[in-house]
Length: 322
Ligand SMILES: Nc1ncnc2c1ncn2[C@@H]1O[C@H](COP(=O)(O)OP(=O)(O)OP(=O)(O)O)[C@@H](O)[C@H]1O
Image (cartoon, rainbow, N blue to C red):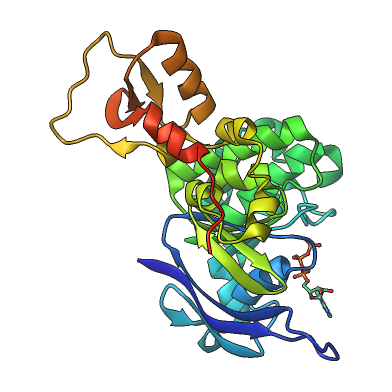
């Protein structure tokens, strides 16, 4: 099912001679995390802000859950769509609980229901409620503020969440921790997330699909694996740094290269196993170390896939497409 659909979506800012977003056509499947990637000024933020009508398209249409967003009041639309921005955007004069409770209050929830939801969300983003509920944003680290920002975006239980470089201003170690958190939450909640980034590693780690923009136009929209192995043109190849394959293998997840295990598949105890979220680099090490012909890919102790050296080799044989 399609959660967001862009049809010829375009935007030209008043007084500007060029299109900031130029005839974007793409469908975002429900439950997927799509990263919009591209160089500075290519239109990533503009495209994102068109979805919750912070910017109105000059031409084309955008559907959210099948509905033309022009037919929904902007305020109502924004209550249905979570939004996380770089500097968290928390209201400084409100406590953490009040910040997270903004949308539930707008939706008219009773106080006890809002309070319970705030605590549930703080637990979900690994901030113990009793420690954090009554603090003000200035009393939090940058990483904690972003966690609260994510909790706030989830508060009304929206199906669609927009994230605009949410971890851009965070140090590298905390950023990795927050990315792990998003992957964990995503496994649990399966929201449709449109995530702006200019960081290739972040895109490869998080995305089910990557949308590459250049000068407002879609250059390629595909899985991280296909973008790395079949870049549409030299621009994509360079953007992805596809010449450094060892680094890329460290970023691609096993699940991006494996084949699904047949329903009757059984693996013997002796066969080495790997988790679907481990990196291809770890998989390669394991194959080389054990001399195994194939690895069984596990998720929650269940065999979900098979990974061979050929799969990894395919992922490393980059060619620039037409
Ligand atoms: N409010 C505005 N008025 C006029 N032009 C704008 C406005 N906002 C953005 N632009 C222009 O539109 C183009 C796309 O900007 P946008 O912010 O979407 O790019 P971006 O890809 O998100 O960039 P970055 O990675 O640097 O944040 C740029 O040329 C920018 O200068």
